[in-house]
Image (cartoon, rainbow, N blue to C red; front, side, top):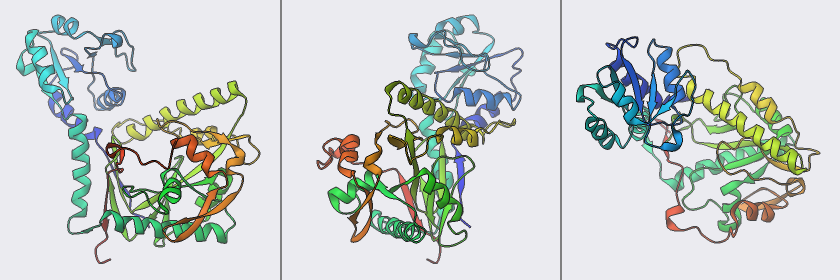
Amino acid sequence: MAQVTTVNALQFIVDKAMDALNNVDVKKTKVVWFGHNVYIDIIQKALISRGKRIHYVIDNNVDKWGMILEDDLVIFPVNQIANNYKESAVFLISSRFEVEMRQQLLALGVRESQIITLPSREESDAMARDFLLKKTEGLKKMELREMQFVMLDIMKALRDFCDANELRYFLAGGTLLGAVRHKGFIPWDDDADVYLPYEDYLKFINIFPIGGRYEIVKQKGTCTSKLVDNNTIMVHGDGYPVKVFRGISICVIPICGYPSEEKAFAQKKHTNEMLDLKWYWYQNAKDVILSELQDLRRDIYELKYNMPFDGSPITSKAHSMFKPMWAVPHKVFAESTPIEFEGEHFSAPIGYDYYLKHRFGDYMKLPPKDEQVDHGIIPFWKEGI
């Protein structure tokens, strides 16, 4: 069976906060979080589930003042809270600007003993990555090109399985771009994407064999899957806060239908974006909040894909997760055409030129050096392989 381990970087922040607040009576002492961020709601619920809580959030951004967050949190100006609670508050700082924020509080009369430093986003991210890297001690690390050939073998396994079971698939994203521009992987790329029409995707994840070298990894309600090589291990260093430890993989992504009428399309797009946020919040919260959370991911999944690929006028992914959304006429993916990739042949959408121009513009032109970046994947062979 595929080995999958995840670690949530927010756990390191919550654990340090709990250590600091263990001797703080939150009924008598105000707990103030300095610096609003998108994870504050999760951190607040995690603390509440452990018997502590944040009372106020302070921020220097005037545009945020008065914002009402979950669990009765409101964002205030720094001086308003610091002046009112100089003698009866502790101030939590989790930021790469900790030194400047500390100096600001001290200048307002807050005592050094009232200021608690927590790991910043960058520090907690590194702690999560290093936690997983300890599991790779003694394993042979791969070079990028070696990893690309592992992914090529996974792609071939997917291709052969889809062909044998009459399932449609298409090279996509940077993988399709690499096929057209480089006849293989983009030189610096460390992942691979394949699209399946939603109807074929459901069959694929349900009938692909379990327990072999190549295996589907999916979680309840997730909107994409990974086809992994169980002879390998990787630490996925990109993305925050959840880091992943599993076999080297390719992304298997379902595509579905969208309406063509402008208002209906905008409404569907907005709905999917809101569902993305709910799904993303749960994924990041479930490991750090002790109280039971309602898992809506299966409902979200079904709401996103309520328009089939076949018969819809527009085609796109339903799951973009904060990336710019693309959408093309269905005819772009209505048929496939063979395309060369690393000396092999795979299926590309018949309208691949339209798709690539829509997504990347002048796609035959190399991006600037500072944009030639990978996804932070650190790959290894399993012991003995």
